[in-house]
Length: 249
Image (cartoon, rainbow, N blue to C red; front, top):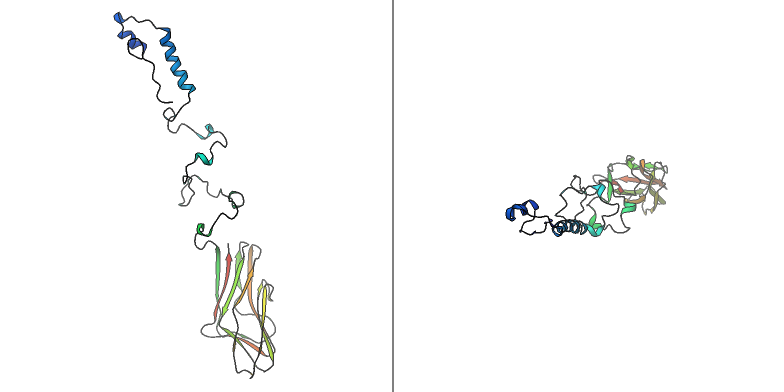
């Protein structure tokens, strides 16, 4: 509905006052068809519905909008903004729930900010000069403390370590990971080693990796070693290595 114009009357004007002024001797009867013309114009305009010309800017408030009346088809593409810059936009902060508002398998790698898949990384340097030759489990590094949100943990121990045997008999070096325990309860791997000549060779020990998913909260992780059959485990200098505990989001 555009701006409503009253119909033109007998003497070419739209208002009765102007009609009287324009009539001879300033006498002009109010004609029934002219009154009907005015009223018909008003009714037709109202019945035809209002348009943007007749609605004042800022006049439509939230209570005037019916529930569920605004649908995806009425919102232009790329016009709904989140709070990416910290300012208040169309989406309320923290209002999108991943379990209900996102369709499964719709968030691709390209949508993630680099680094968001990793919640935290704890790094510990392996000390040079450590050695152990007993069957009792011993901490290779200082126990690693971490408070998790319940995400999966990747445990990586890349040490410059080796083993040797004081005899020519078969010996074993075992490395493992313990969570909140001084014995392995996540992962353990033994390496059987037999020397042709006692204490002549040092045998490198591979990287130790494990995967864990603890409950949310504080935990202590132990990188442990146990030796038997005359074996001795060493960390070397100057490249004794590093241990990482990585919590994934």
